[in-house]
Image (cartoon, rainbow, N blue to C red; front, side):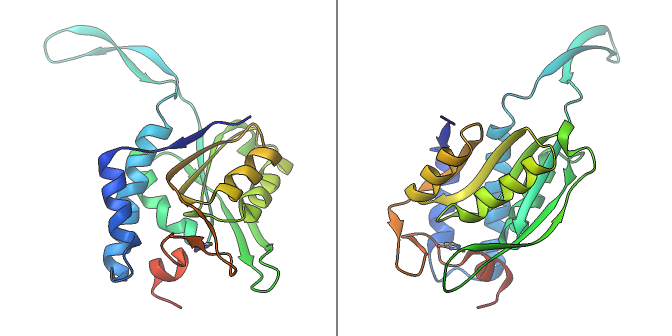
Amino acid sequence: MSKLTVFDHPLIQHKLTIIRNKDVGTKEFREIVDEIASLMAYEVTRDLPVEDVVIETPVATTTQKTLAGKKLAIVPILRAGLGMVDGIMKLIPAARIGHIGMYRDEESLEPVEYFVKLPEDIDQREVLVVDPMLATGGSAVMAIDALKKRGATRIKLITLVSAPIGVETVQKTHSDVDIYTAGLDEKLNEHGYIIPGLGDAGDRLFGTH
Ligand code: URA
């Protein structure tokens, strides 16, 4: 069974509470999602391997740690996932970016794939799939399917807010994919929104509705 990490860091919890508030406008929402994404990236990359490197400081030769050349890809699920990319890129600027386009059919609530563009060597990269809201889990499962079909083997899922059913669905379907989230909420409502959630993440990020 894959691991579920719910971040209890005070800064992450505080910032998530701010953006749950319906009165927070687009600019502040976007900025805070960016900040949370950076904080989450710091934790999600904790297990990256390091290796020794010999360097010269102004006063001595020393052996120190450096990242062991591990290749990463960040793959937002369009469109709300885009809101988390810059925050992660601040910490991992050399990561490649893939895109997976999904929309949710408003009636069936089922995800429909319409666009997949990934780095060519996706099979050699650790992949961070990002989507702010893990609701039914349908889009995440489909995005992970799309990645595995193209050779990706090491995949992590990063979300802001998750519903228990979404977590369960991903864990059942992709037991090798660890999930990282800032908030584990109660349930979905009849329209597929996470309760209490924060509303439609894409609309709140991009000022649409
Ligand atoms: N997608 C969102 O943007 N919000 C939800 O609450 C559920 C799915």
